[in-house]
Length: 434
Ligand code: XIL
Image (cartoon, rainbow, N blue to C red; front, side, top):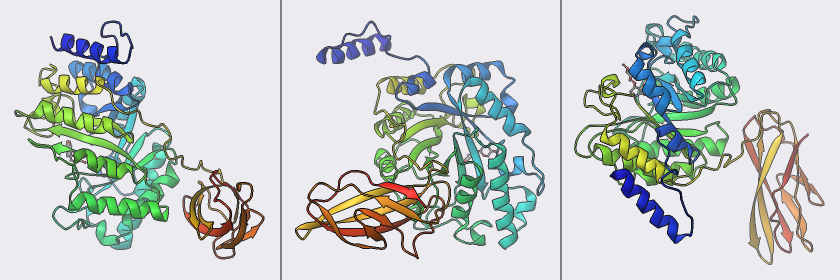
């Protein structure tokens, strides 16, 4: 019945645009395949200990195209004693993901919870170096295999006006988060690096604190690629849920819904559908992960998942599938191309018409290797000329660093500007490392 209604509604919509669709072949029939129609993934948190359960594994392999280890890559699991690493559980999840052709999300390199006892008892610079070593070792072990890492989990406080949570990690210094992101980037340059948190599922003081951190990281060249919104939800969804996703996307990071589960009750199916639609509406929302498969696999006791304890699809499942099949925006596969490691530098231009001529600001961003000098070539419209430059020397329309801004750390950036007559340049400038 539902299928028939949907099919005819779609046929009517298609008829308006003159496209004829044969039956309802347009609708994919699993969560992963439906999400893939718009370039996204639909994932589940999985537990190594459940992979022997045939119902569990059947649902996993047929429905999902991303996996996250529920506990197996956490600090207590991967480094049970200091400097001695155990990847057995994490590798089982990784191999399950690889066997399925799924994206594997890494979760989580640093968190105030599920720390091994030895780390809980450390503090100060000893803890800081143990933590950074942990990031480096684990990210190196999984190098090239992880789609996105939750580098830091849950570092912001609830009800502290957008401030940080107190923790042993926080007490090592406010810069612990950026130190962790830099270490993760150095260890696995291919993984997207995410900051992940809960109670951030709308515009509120906590999500704004995180937003400000991401904006700061972006402006200072601290590597960050994505924000995870856990989305452990109750009986309602914040009216600013989509707007919140969008504002993070507008900072130039991807957004992922990382741990979705929704309290069972009258609204469960609607809330699941609303989350799905919100993600599909934002091109940089790249995928959704539910935190478990069946209600009986959940860490919560309020039946928050898409399959019941017997593995049957719930109403929430159908509402998600329908929302995925209704489409959405297609993500740009490379919306904000990061410079490739070793690729030298990139430059972006912000022109400004001014006083009968123009000024232009150029941001030079280093690739995966630190710069020791740079030149930027700008192509000027005919009739335009450069009259003077600041924070660079100029010859014609080629600009070279001055003494104090030639050194740019990997991923970092610096700016210079110039003034000219005529109309401002519009073409992207070309940057070269020297
Ligand atoms: C939970 C797991 O589901 C449980 O099995 C474990 O006992 C505790 O952690 N936020 C997170 C996840 O980032 O790692 C948590 O997972 C749920 C809350």
